[in-house]
Every structure is written in structure tokens, then in C-alpha cells.
Length: 296
Ligand code: RIB
Image (cartoon, rainbow, N blue to C red):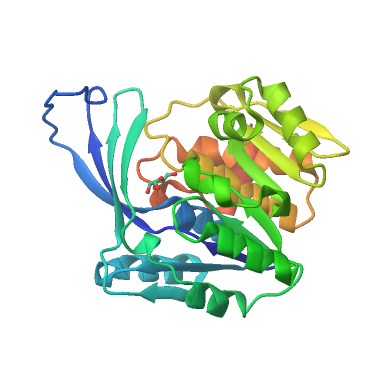
């Protein structure tokens, strides 16, 4: 099964800080790194590293060549990544001594998708293929409608959650991958069990993955629910942990793995990602994940 991911590509400017800066405060840091990131390409990389045939659709500027090199290195098909006359999206990320982050996002080229571009990308895909989306590119409502017309399965990670998602017809989503905050926004409640119940009432045909940070993850659909605890580790940077989970979860699903096995593999993959700095470089290969699972 093929996966098309139409999503963001960001250059992440990551600064190590003692604590996340408060309003009006100045804090000096001697440590800065530029990593490849963006929820979209992070999830494509996780899929590719998990062994899935994945195509990434998106836009970058002339400064985005490192993304094309990384796609080549890890096996993400980049034929639908277009270079345009705009700056590549970027972020300013603070990572504090407890590995917590705070992210300022500049959309840049990620916000320049056109309907003609989307039509051209979707023309290569058909019923049964999976479309994966996050909320860091423009035109989500259009992309969802067009992919639905084609009979694609649509997986949505509505992150970061904002009012633009109100225009998306959520009844067309097949798989929701949400954290507590995003699930709470969709369901209108903050209790995890109530989020799952309300989302399944609203979207009875959907599969829902709800990640709960240190409290693990829950899966629910019309027939089954499963819980997966985290694998405790000493985290250095939590950036892309959720993206790693999402990519590995879809990988397991696309291979027909059982949900409990898929959840376990995804939790292990993201537990490895948080022990490494950066987004794309922190995502483990499938072989590493499987070996770590054997040893746990
Ligand atoms: O999910 C992590 C990602 O969010 C980072 O790589 C950053 O680019 C932001 O989009």
C-alpha cells in the first residue's frame, strides 16, 4: 500500500536553553543546531524508515535542497516536492534542560500550495492509497475533499490545532492521530476516555489514535480499544516524538499488523526518538526499533 503525505518541510533552528524564555526575558545560549524538520517531512521520514513506500508532496524554497538530499538518502519519493520562489518554512525551537520544547513556526513555502498543485499530486494516486495530512500547509479542506472523491483513505494529524481546521470536513477522515489537546478540541472534552467515546460517536467509521504523553496512547474504533504505555527513557529532546509515532503507526496499519503490535512498535520508535536531538535525525530505522523491542 502506498502512502502520500502532503505536508510541511521546515528548517528547525534549535536552541538549547535552561528554561523556556518568559515574556520580556533575554537568555543567552551557546548551543544552536539547524535540523531538518516539519511535521510533514518528519512523518514521511518515519514511514520511510519503517519501510513504507511513501511519497511526499509539498513546497520548499531554493534553500530547501537538504530536504531533497535526505529524501534520497532515506527513500522518500520526492517527485512531488516543488521548489518555488519563497523561503522554506522554518521554526525557532527552544529545548530546555528537561527536554521540553517551545516552537515558533514560520510557514513560508508550506503556505503556498495551489489547487493546481494539489490536483497534479493527487492525479498519481487512487482508491485505497493512504493520504496523510497535518495542519502545517494551506488548502487542507480542498485536499481532503479531492482525496475523498478519489476514494483514498485519509489520515489526519490535526497538529498544530487552530481555527483553520474548522473548514475541514472531518467526516471524510478515516484515521485520526491526535494528542489530548487536539482530541479535546475535536470532542469538546478533556478526559481521554470521553474524547475517544465522543469522537467515535461523531465519526463511527474512523480509527482513532489518542496519544497521552507520559500516560501512553489509546486506540479505538467501532470494534476494539487498546492501551499502550510508554517505554520510559531519559529524554533529551521530545521534538518529532509524535511524528515518529504517527509514521510508525501508519506503517504497521498499512502492513496489516495487529493494533497491539502496531502500538507497541510506535511507542518504542518514539521512545528512541526522544533520546536523540533534532527532528528528522532523531527518527530511528525499523531495524533499530525491532532490536530494541526484542531487548525490552
Ligand atoms: O512535530 C515537530 C515539528 O513541529 C518540528 O520539526 C517543527 O518543524 C514543527 O513543525
